Length: 91
Length: 178
Image 1 (cartoon, rainbow over the protein chains, first blue to last red):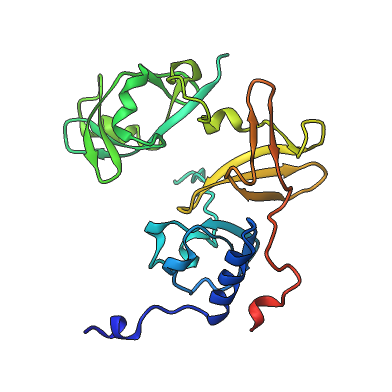
Image 2: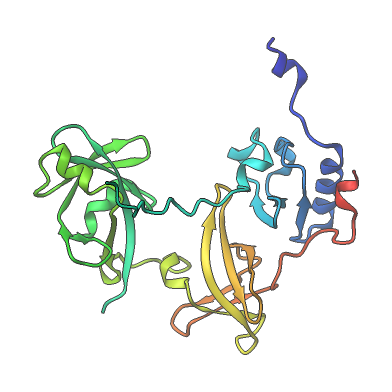
């Protein structure tokens, strides 16, 4: 058994509580989280999380094929605007 | 001038016979050649394209008149556009995102305008609608779901959102309780 399998997925504990509370409330609220490092578990499927990207919360609707990924993967922290053209003349 | 829609971008040359790789914004990259001739951003050049296959998620495309790798490399970075009228008709409850950008955003009723649709984003977890609220500099993001966007009326030019911001489960809660 590999070490990562033996250790199991990492999830911050309070996320489970928040997810349970949101599911029981059965309202379509977004769960605000800063824990980008947590793994998505099967019990999160169908819930919408607002994942902080350092600036604002990005809505992430968890689907079955996202299980096992980290929340942070779906809320990019950088914006690439492209490189400017090199207009300087070379002599 | 007729409204045009960007369907992809030439990202690389492929092989030595003038084929290119196109990053498609369509759901199916193999459909790229079904809209007729495509043109570049300023409509100065028209291209007749034929999809040859797939390279990873990009379409491998043969462009008429482009026969060498040098020709293909010269086209890298070109965005390809088709007229809006060339796109196929959609079923009910289906929309082209390009048609929704710029629409009026109303809160709960069509009379209550709060802003306009600035863009759509997709970071891998579903479509996100980005709204430019009136009188605010920053944009607001909402999940593009029936819950948040219950009504879309393209003919009359508005969409209705159920909330102007995301409704968080526990706004008053401390930051993750850490």
